[in-house]
Length: 248
Image 1 (tube, one colour):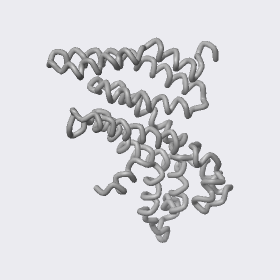
Image 2 (cartoon, rainbow, N blue to C red; image 1 turned 135 degrees about the vertical axis):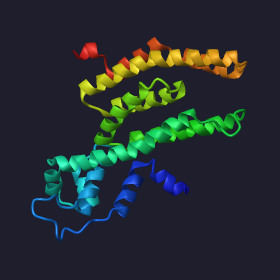
Image 3 (cartoon, rainbow, N blue to C red; image 1 turned 90 degrees about the vertical axis):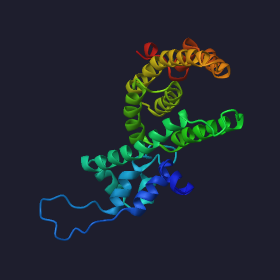
Image 4 (cartoon, rainbow, N blue to C red; image 1 turned 180 degrees about the vertical axis):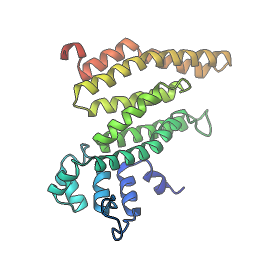
């Protein structure tokens, strides 16, 4: 796969442009009265932009109107239709299937030469870039659908500690985005549960590494445990997002 094509699968703005470019608008001629009419291209485009609406670059409906060529009033009308939101949610699920799959895969990836520190640094930078794209570009619908999937993925019994760590960072990004306290604190409570799970996972990984005689890996896992500090991390979450007790 070409680099540009690959990036289109991970950058939501590029992905939307690709989907709109490839969208074939069916003819309305011959559709029996009472049957659902095909979705026009500009409406499909508007539905996909709901994935980034509420984000950094599409914080106002007038921006969606300008991008799609639809009037503000028409957009407002569409946003009252369940079918319009179903289009957006279906698109979000399609994008997230690829994005989250690669995100978790990258967490467990190893450089071609495991002894090369630069290789590990390159992987860490790629993870950082993916997280940066999330915080810059994702909107309300994408964050909401992502949280549902992240919560489910984080409870998979076979998930690695490294992958769980990366899911944790994505969960924090979801919490930063949400202004609704009920959902925000629901996410933060799950992150606090994950703190304990992560430390337990890294302890197990350290034991396995010691048993295999891989001292370097074992020491690396122990260092992660020391830096993670469950209570300190939970205190940080309370400082960053506020305490549920204080809010109540």
